[in-house]
Length: 446
Image (tube, rainbow, N blue to C red; front, side):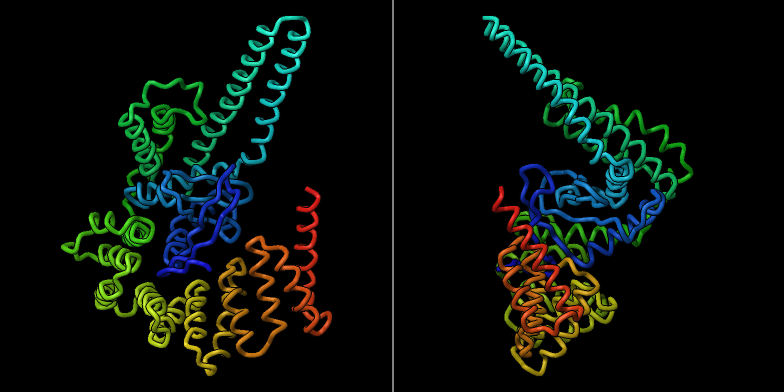
């Protein structure tokens, strides 16, 4: 069963990094902040904001990364560690530098070069062993591995330094101050110093040392006309809200309440505590914090979304409909909020609400077709209205996204059997059946 708690949609992310299986966090307010904060940087890079994806990953490591294509992954730990949105913009600009410079593709060259050095050392080691010198063979192999590692790390450091320079250029062209980029590198440097990682071999690092990065970038960033540009107050307020709600969602409730004690009556504190109390199983306290937010701004769509979500998950979907409906209308049918609204309509178990659930969930999947939970809910709505072929098609969509190729193939074929041939829905079902079927065959071959 999917975890769907208070505005954050959780999806499994597998393979974004080697040996990694993480959770993607999706939240309408967070994605709106990212879109606004990063748009000028993306445009400065020459890429399209419509094509660059920013994905929030639940991981307390202070990190961001790319893994191919035009997608930048940002860890929740980085958001919590950042002091302001300008610091996050600096990190994003660096990662976009990797994307624009094609570093994921070029990384294969560095890996191949290092692999070549390692293979050569093994061949020479085998020759030494055959000549009667096992000690020499071991020495050659060890030296080869060190050389291969050094070769790869040197390649990685060059890429990181290049991404720093490219990111700085993007910030300058976008008219965004580079103070955040330098401040965040200084933060990393201070963390290294704090934990005693200052006396390190620079040639055994995958990134340039933080001190070197600061020195290399300072002149470029400080010479920009945007260096002393003041922060955008609206962006900063939005960041503080997102940071607070994220902390309330991912952290232990005790830690959240320590950071945002009841004496703190700011909007951010109410936000954080609402999530913490909801997560900790205190529904009345969660509703009280949400009520304080609604009182502060009765027509804030994200406050209304939170109110509806807590009511829905507290077992009162009927009461959740009004705030969710208003949130949907205020955000022009934002797909994640619309999905929650559709879920609430279904959860009322009132047949009169099912046709509207189908309508809004179709809108949500059209505008954001990469949301398996939305497809799952749409399938449920179709089933409740007696449209089994389209219920099977929606199930196939959801299963394909989650990697359940067997269910995807079976559901797609059942959908095809009940849909008029050669219609758009039938063709889509056929596509899923073929794609997921091929994936199944590949798994059997391996």
